[in-house]
Image (cartoon, rainbow, N blue to C red; front, side, top):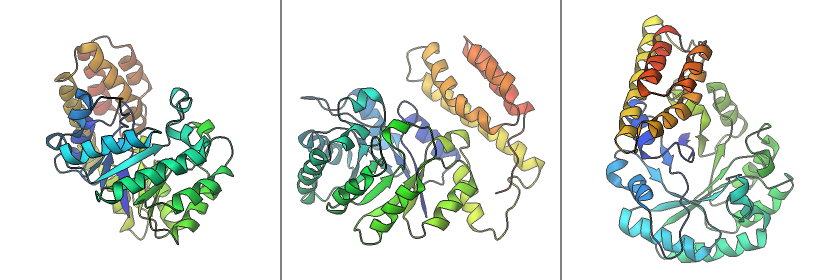
Length: 337
């Protein structure tokens, strides 16, 4: 089984990917936050930095593109291939944001299946000669899971390298539980498809990954987003669990748990320093750190009072003091894997 880091807009750019890979180098792939092609423009500075090989050393990174215009998609793909050396791109059909959906982009593109089919036909024909692979990350529809059957037929008739399915509807955003029945439809289609199949959605524990691999044997990969933001060592735990006949404690002893807390603090410090080197001021860095720790705090036993101090912090020094105290005084969650 392969494991991918899902793209999260504003969070999993190259600075985060680089630090995560340095401290927790177990992932098979990282996906960039989506690129929206601009008419008569190429990539902006932020996007260029996110794609440079020098900023993604040692990682397999797949650029994600969000558009409903085949010409735009093909143009930006050629830029990614010729200027940056990428050999695979990913189409975003999953973003549920209302501003995105209103423009029939992201998961909004699923509401016009005829346009989507024409788009994929033009894109696949355009990519065929270049040898660039196309994968798709999709939701199962807008309002009703019954929409997914027709969408699957579209995906089956095109030359995709991989179909990544987040089995929620656009209207669900990130609420409700993933629809395993809908994913089973994709799993059945996968048996006769040319593309590989990847599951995405609510994988936060080793047991979640085990359920997916048990229910859907033979799928190519599992993609994880928020679960890795909460617990950056989740992939290590999943892979360790694959080789255990019985569930074991998350940490073998107090020393290993203490060492991991020190590692989390070091991980955070590298992120803070790297963001400080590219952002314009302390407020911007604070915003990033608060966004990241809103997830990272959740892997500690009693983070509430520390998180309260972090949220109130107006200076990086105050924020850092709260993060240091949390990592020193509170243990990481203890459970079996």
